[in-house]
Length: 292
Image 1 (cartoon, helix red, strand yellow):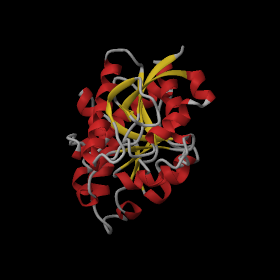
Image 2 (cartoon, helix red, strand yellow):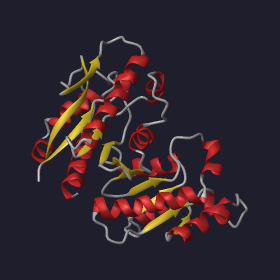
Image 3 (tube, one colour):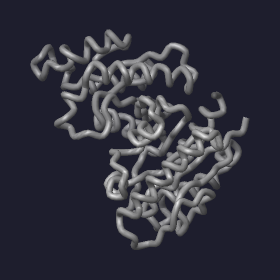
């Protein structure tokens, strides 16, 4: 079945319009889906759903406003059944907030717009990583990594892998918070006091030290690893598969994917942006939507 996807152009100052243009020219993408491009006029990729006008030199809040409005419109299209999934080009989180959208990123904004409990997963053919906490300061992580957060992430991940990835019995592992999983309390007691009981309650393995659990998953022992905080999980997946991994928001009523990188404003307009991850994001979203 051929599916229809909404694709947002992201921050108009960044490489979003360029990588969308390049990805839509890809033969595999053209064969798999039809696309409704959502974004402003005035950028290099034409938008089917125009949400405003961009001019080079406009200030950051304007870029954030257009980025947020495109996300809102894409969600409307998905909820109305006009498209079967959403693919989003990168946004600038500071600009998004300056534009009037007080969300740390796509994941949190999509959860608010749909009322869904979500989990952020980065996936490739080598590794899948899900975050128990997302965009928060490192100093806030120990109090945010609660049993409820871990159990919720495990539940959403298990359901998502079954429904969207066809894995009947997902094998999940929990990455430890502290070095060597705390080494019996020597390097912190959170792993023994919080993470281990939460893993048992969620029916998942671990916690296992970060320096081994991702290797074990890449060797086929686990279908996904739940990471306690952003950078430990993102570093693992990006070292393993940068440029080919896909960000998948689990838990939404429709599939949403995005590339595994940011806006790259420093190279925007130079024509050198690599569309590889955007291509994979489009193909992944189309595959999930086709199977639902």
